[in-house]
Length: 302
Image: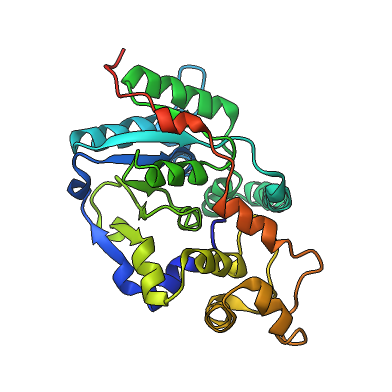
């Protein structure tokens, strides 16, 4: 899910922190890539098997095509990608993952009805909503990257957190992902729509964390609290607050701790188990692999 409503909020409150960029901007740079984003994008874009992205035994290979061609586009433009794969989700994310699994089951029921009714457009739409990345998808992508001589890292938990560490430790310039929580994890720069084919509707955008905080007049810790109030994967949030009210309260009270002692609890519902402190710690001090601090150099393709 990332951070609910964050991109729209930044566009309105800190537009100077977002700029459209060309891929050539990153010539000579190392970019940390959230691997699951590319895999998911291509698995969902190839639900129609008439595209022919299948191997000899009928298995979908669209994810391999995606990783291959996105990687080639980066390399052709002088960019050095480091792919980062998700590890085991933290226990705090279990509730969110359960919600997603339950939603997929509901969509499967709708999909069966659509198939029975012969509604091809609805079938195509619903099919994309039940896509799930498997271990097989991940293993095959790692094998491809290995053959291409492109390094990858296995994160302990969330790939976005590991990507952010690569940036903070100086091993990468920016994080390429669609998930805005990379900013909450402390990535200095986040790039969305990275390495997409040139298309006005898919223009790459770079988000600058320092500029975001400057324009909002808050520090990094307050930004993390703001993201938690907007809605993240690690805990529930205050019902009825919304991004702009959340920002107003952060400006006034500076932290969630102070907000919950001053907020009108009749107007805004505070969850019974609002473990924002643990969520905050997961963003500020995530479990990351030290493997990233001794990242392998790029090597020749096999």
